[in-house]
Structure formats: structure tokens, C-alpha cells
Length: 230
Image (cartoon, rainbow, N blue to C red):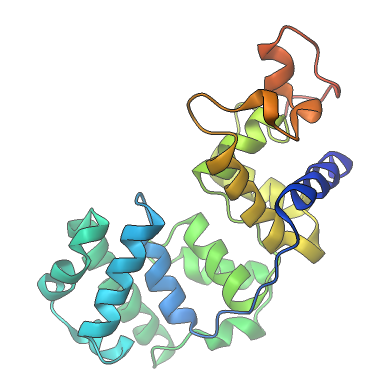
């Protein structure tokens, strides 16, 4: 399966080009931004994030703010009744456990320990935890969003019965460690531009020769026979 994933990663790079990344230095801000991104578009979540940065001088002042004040600033991102208390609780819980609102200690932890800390905070799910570790601390974790889940399932890289959390664990072990950020972003780009939930553009897809979904849809056996992973 690693060979299949390597082939997919190579084709995606050929199509979208090589990407360069800088490590996100504000891990707390990254956590807030990722919570805001849940179940909404990048455009609205970025606007909500900008609203928070303009309204509150620091993440500490955000932590101390009333939930109602947070809710007003992030309404544009949707689900503000859920996200506002979730953000406040996460910031408060970090401060309670660590004595300050700082996540830099995660860089000293191994990936599993850092992931465990973040997941133990109510409202911080698998994808959010993985994004903070990958983009904030260069930890080799593969966040799985709806696009990645759909694309990898259609390709046959994950089994049809896998949950997103199990898929994340599996892909973390199988994805190219030296290019995991690029692979993550390329899959999202492919899911948005080509392998859409409805009416995927299969005829022009660079991955169709490797795709289980394409082979089944067009009545042909996929080029590669993969074992079902559950």
C-alpha cells in the first residue's frame, strides 16, 4: 500500500506542483483557527478568525472573555453556539493544566503523547489535534478531513468500513513522512477541484489509472487489486 500511496503522491505533485511550508509559530492561534474551520468553508472561518484577532488583544484576553462576546465575533463561521464555548474551554483547559496559555511544550513530546494531550481536551477532535501537531510542530501526523476521506476511499487506499479516525491512524503510518504536509494539502486540492463529492471529474483525473472507484464506475477491474481494509 505504501507503493500505491507513493504513486498517488507523485502524480499529485506532478499535477499541482511542489509546495513549500513554514511552520506555524502560533500554536494556540492554530488551534483556535482549526476549531473555527469545523463544518464551514475556509473563507468564513478565516473571517471569523480575523474578527477574533481584531476584537481581542491576545489569546489570554480571549480566554477570559464571555462566551457571548466570542459568539458574536465568530457568528459568520456558523455553529457559533458550539464553537464559542469550545474555544473558551480549550484555552481554559490548557491554562489549567499547564499553568499558562502555551502549547510550545508539545514540541518536546513525542507524537503520540502530544496527540493524546490535545485529544483529551473536550471539543478537540482527531483532525484538529493532527493539524496542530503537523503544521505547528512538524509532527508526522496525517489529518483526514472530508475531502481526504472521500478521495482515499475512492482510490481504494482505505477500506470502505474505515472511520475517519481509523483512516487518519492508517494514513499516518503509510503516508510519505518527508512530504506529509504536501500530500495532505494536495489531496484536499484534488478533492475540491477534481474528485468532488458530486459529479467527480473522472475522465480528466490524473489518478484514474490507480482508482478503484473509476474502475468500478466504468465496468472495469481497477489496475491494482487491493485488499479491503476494515
